[in-house]
Every structure is written in C-alpha cells, then in structure tokens.
Length: 610
Image (cartoon, rainbow, N blue to C red; front, side, top):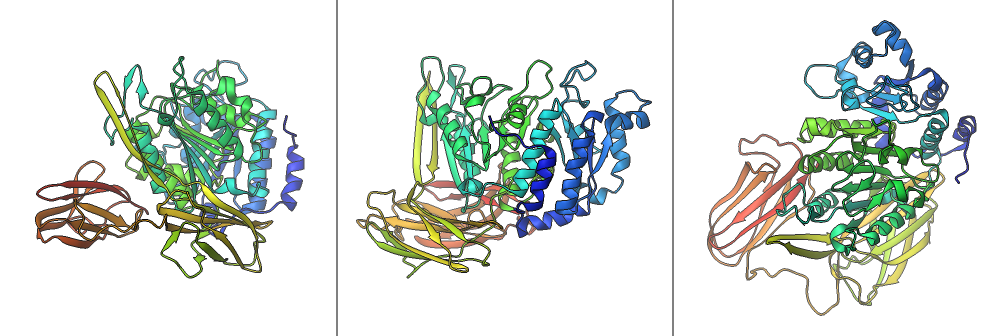
C-alpha cells in the first residue's frame, strides 16, 4: 500500500518542492488571479478546504474563498438543504460576468441524487443531472464558471485527494510520462453486428482516435490501444487489450482517454478495463494521469449503491488518476468527439487548466450543449494537466532531407536556458498507414488509420550549459516513411521541457519517397496541418480537366470555393486563409477540402487551431 502523508506534512513539503509551472501556464495563472474562486464544503471538511485554499494563495497568490454548505442554506433557504440555494448563492457571489471564465467553483464532497438520505456519500447536495447547473448564472442555458468536485466520502479520502494535488504541483515525478498520452478506442462490434459503418460516424471509434491524434502537438508521444487490433475470446472480451491498457497506464501516461461505449464499471463491451475487478492492478502512484472518457455514464457518481469508475480512480491509494472527466448519463459519440477535440487542444496545445479548458470546449466547440453538460470534472478545476513546454530546436547536423538505413547521424539541441541538467533523447521510426476491415451479416466496416512509430534509438545525454548533442546510426529494417520524428525530454529540479523535430523522412535507399509531379491518379495534401490561420493545399492533376476545390465545415456546408475552372495537367498550390466566401474568419475546428475533376474526387480533413 502507498505510504500516506498527512496534510500538515504535505504543507511542509510545499516549502521545499519545485514549482512545475512554465511560462505558458503562467499567463493562465495571472488571469485566474483576477477571477473569483470558491470552495464549498460541509462542516467536517472545512479544515482541509482551508488548507487547500492556503496552498493556492502561498503558491500562486490565487484567493479561494471557503464557505460552509450549511451557511449557504441558512442564508438562502432558511436552513433547509436545498440544492437551488447553492445556485442562488453563486449568482450573488459571482456578480461580475467579465471574470466568469477566469473563476472557479470546487465542490468538496461526494453527493448523490438521494442527497437527503443519511449516507457517507451525501456530503454535498447535487442539482439536476450535472454540476454545471450550479453555475448556470444567467439565462442562456450554458454553464458560466469552471466547476469541479472532490468526490470524497470521508476525511481520509479527502486528504488523499488533496495530498495528491499538492504533490502533483510541487514535486511531480519528472520523466517521459509527462509527454505521453494513451488513447483507448472501442472496436466495431455491438450487439452481434457492426457499428461505425461510415468514417464520419460518431461510433467509428478508431476513426475518432485517429482524428484526435492528428489534432495534437507533434511533440507529444501518442500511444494507442485499438480494440480492432485484438482477438475476441469466447466470452466476447478482449483480455489482451485490457492487459495492454493496464501495462501502459502503469508505465506512465499524462492523459488516459477512452473513446467508445461504457458505464459506471467498465470501458467497452469487450472489457478494456473493469474497475470492480482490475482497479487493484493499477500501481501508478508516481504518475497519475488525467482520465477522460468520451463515453456514457462512466462518471455517474450520483448512485448510493456504487462508486463509479471516475470516483474510484481519485480515491484508490495505490494509483488511479489525478482527476477524471466523464459523463453522468448516456451521450452522443459525434458530440463527444467535437467536445474532446477542443478540450485536448486547450490542454495540450494552449496549456489551459482543467476547468477553463472544459468550459471553453463546452461553450465554443460546437458540440451539443445538452450532451456536453453531462461531463463533470471530478478533480480540481484549477489543476494544470499539461505536457511540458516545447520548441523545435533539435538540429540534424548537415540537415539531410532523407535518413537512409545505416546512415551515421549527428544531432544537437539548443535549449532556451541553462535550467536543465538531464536529457533523454529518442529517435522514432516513421508513423505508418494501417487498414482494417470486417463484415458481418452483409454489413461492411473499414477504417484507415496510422500508428505512431516506435523508438529505434534512445540515449541519456549530458547537457553542457544550454546545449547537447549525440550521434547514432539509423537502424536497418525500421519503419520507413515521411513521418518520423525525434524528441528530447529535458529536465532538472526546476522543471522540464521538450524539444522535437518532425516530420523526418526515413528510406531504405531503394526508392524515392517523393510523389511524382504527374501521378497516375489525383493527389492532394495540405501543409501545415493542423494550422493557424492559413494552410497551403497542394494537388497534382494527371490530365487536363475542369476542377473544383471547395472547403467544407464538419456539417457538410460550403465554407470557401478556392478553385473552379479548367486546369492543365500539372502540380498546383493554393492557400486557404481561414475565411469563408464572404471573407469572414471562421471559428477553429475540423474542415474538409474536396477536390473534384471530371474523373476523380478526393476529400481530406484538416484542422484549424486557435
């Protein structure tokens, strides 16, 4: 069992712990200082609530007011435990709408739909089907303040959660896990038939995992467990997939995200993880991930009879998660995809803290708000769960355009400061294309996706001042392609940083990876992708033809007609500047460009970031 540290002992550690906050996160801290923050707790949890509030003041100079739940009832509902009393109190507390997004509410205690039944789970009242209803302060049906909940049933659980949050901030375990994300995707089987038969379907979980992986920083190490790649046993389960999930979480992941079907106890009909039987197999106290589930009811914490998976991850002493984001009710796969694409861009690409990242995604992603409000944060809305700050200052000496098998390669890295003492360097094989298909009872399922390349060279490098270098040989037989990368994870007692170079071409030397100028069929690609605010679409026509090149949004609506007319065979480029046909800038998100000739049509996806 993990060694427990008292809150007083943890507060002493704060005095000597590091502050793992980078400059990207600092801008969000400065905004939070201008907001209002409140912790609502029952009387028995007030001591712990004040200790957390004191920590945030000492560490970040963020003021968090602590209020007794009963005092709210006394003031707003004549002493009666009435959920709407908390909403009424918060409407008065947050009287300045201009700072709502920079503010936060933390509910300290578990609660159920039967909140008036005496029970350890009924520490804080609940309202409706989502904690968002506590912070719907105006009439537009959207939540207005970032909100989270510590689902503690007793002081022991509460101290465990708070201890972990403080240690996560002040003395995290610095290692590669802070730059890794695990995506677990359900397979195509459902009720003896197939689902997700169209690529755009919200139930094509493999396609959704591909879409998410493509939207994140090229510096992050994205690992995946895809249900389609595992054999099903006679019980309809995939135990090898479940074991891989457990092994990868124990090895360390900053984020663990599930896409597919689920409920309070299990991820996927094929049992990719079942909390009632497999929780004790998690031994990851030194690297607790953010757990998220684009699924239904995985986060239904409102039952008296059963603690849901999202709750148990926070209160399990030997591991689990630092926070969970999951739904309290059934949800829509398509809307979930849009919500989490925006959320992870906020977390990974913009370094926002949990509450602001999720609220922004709910309001601005375009996901259905009724669906989005079903997702709650079990954790501190002010917690940062971000990969390290990064840049692209790795140089391949001599800057070869293509790495060939058995080439001797030298690289160097120029760091932004002398604050780092250790470097762990990895050279990865190229990403590679995969295709999967299946048919049942006349239904046909197929999906294209890519897999992240594996490291083929790893080395710990000594940093001299703000510089490091190493040499190695490109291993023969590794995966070739145009999407290899190199990543350095550097760190010291002051924090960590990531450097990377991508994309890199690896070739076996027998053929050129270049696309011919006049291919035998239509070819198109865009770069960069993701992009902000513009991208170049390059295409090659094998024959003279009348063509159309049109940009569509995710709803299939025409956004911009880029090219329409006769063109000769050849290679062309055109720039889309992120504006529609009326020259108005469009919101960030997923778009498609469709290239049509008299003989062929190509449609490809691209992602505009904020």
